[in-house]
Length: 500
Image (cartoon, rainbow, N blue to C red):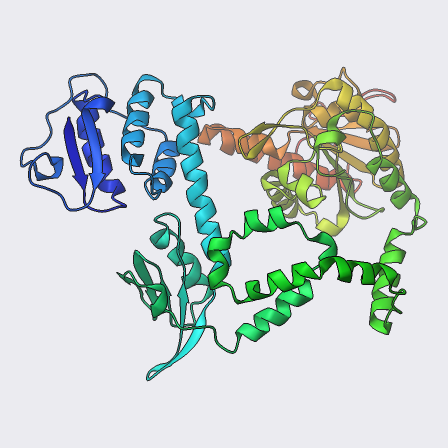
């Protein structure tokens, strides 16, 4: 068996080099062992003078980013065989590239358990370190003692540097010491006796802990799980736990028996504000009434997944109404239409065409965000005909409230909502249509421009879209221009105006 002695407890880069070479030579997991400490000259791959023999076993070894993140934490676990386990996982990845997604595999479970243990230990260190102030010739310094369960000091040090950048501090641990005086350094390990005893500030912790202790919510198992006894020696407030726990039942009985306290003036004002917020308020106008009804709509399933209803925005007397398809990710989070990338593009194009935001009413045919989840992202999904038809009732009532001579539909879904299922964007784009007392002008959705991969096609479509909006600005002013054949259509036929 080949013994590989790494340079230290945390030597991920050294492990990577050796593991890559060993895997390329098809060294099995049972034929190699990784140990940490001082490297010996024999049986040490680090002492090889010649480069590793090139692999003849096919394509170079590649691993997913998830393996690198996992290994970076696992190598900080105190399990002696952690590097052997990582090498075994590396070989399994060569055979099964998606091996780490097999949650039922014992090796995957063990590595993920070790990863969680390291994360949990780091969290405990950020929560349970308590600094004590000491006097030094160069000024006040702060010292803390902590005993981590794993090798997390280097991993956790940036947290304390970011949080206490203005302090000069040292965090002593048995393995190493974290030192910060404007530059981050690591020194030798220390003993508990090297840390100073509790200082006068411990009294402040006592007051704080007594004030937040609720005897009616005392759960010993939960307390011990979140704050194991091994950390109690470092936490000044834990000196009070035994005493407060012993009288918890008595304090609870006293709280129940005590008469209701009279609210102070400031507390009464806060309570009144909360009561006012809970009291239903009558809608101020027809638009607010419609908005309240739309927020309660459950005609389709989109409301079950979306964050909120996204209704229209703009003046009730506008030059033009712009109807898009549906809210996007940012619109769903902010509750406003056209605030995402496509909205930024549209608002810029409207300004270039001569519209101001105070003259435009912006809305969507569908009022909830339809998406499919992809990891942490939510990917837009085109709404179906039934969803468009369900929301058409809201759109019709919305358009009835807004006074504007022109309706511009952006995309095929918006055109269907405004003109019916037989309307085709390819045939009607840029051609004004009589829509009752209004004019309807169909064009593309600005998101279409963002999706075009070909720069030439994107530039051409952007010019056409800009022309459509210039024509919209012309129509919104009531301007008409005869078509190229110098003939106007008869009443009831589709109006046709020259493109500007």
